[in-house]
Length: 231
Image 1 (spheres, rainbow, N blue to C red):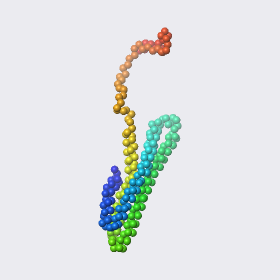
Image 2 (image 1 turned 180 degrees about the vertical axis):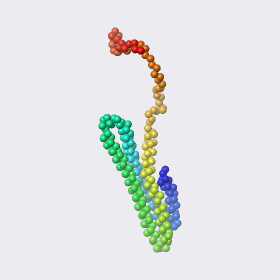
Image 3 (image 1 turned 90 degrees about the vertical axis):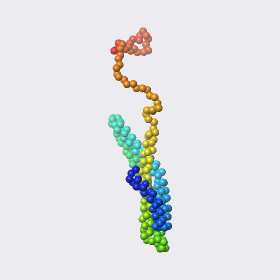
Image 4 (image 1 turned 180 degrees about the horizontal axis):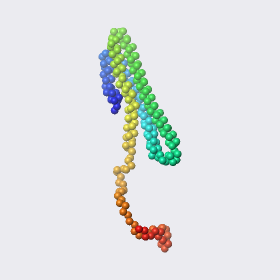
């Protein structure tokens, strides 16, 4: 796990704690961030399915691109002999474009989710200020309590915004792990449950004495040896 992941996970338990402090300081204003938290979580969950599909497509296209590179390097002499450099270059450019397209699509999904979360945070600030003004006018809240409430509310929803930003990394790791597990389940070339023919060690000490060879299919009278007396 990276430092950003650890920071986001360590901040999550403080979300409910900040919400409870807001209830103590701001009274009924604590319902605003408490209602906003499920909306942010819903956005984070909703973006996972299209993001997972996009990351799987990106991993598949990246594997095709890398496989093409290995194939071209392994058969470099054959490519030069048949003049297939242009064909392999066009395939490389096609796979590179597909991988870049899916990577950009994943970034767009993450950016949209992050933008929606930032919009909710701004709406939260506006709603807190508007409701706080009415509570101050009614004598139920002080100016300092309103300022503290706005600051604590932004701090309460900040870890959730980081979780949305980490969705791309999570889906990348998930897709890579699934691909690795699929690779490890592929049958090996040499099955340990089968018994193969023994391969004894050859010393190379072979001797030929009085070797005779004749072509088959002829009568015994005409079956003259083609080779005879070879040593």
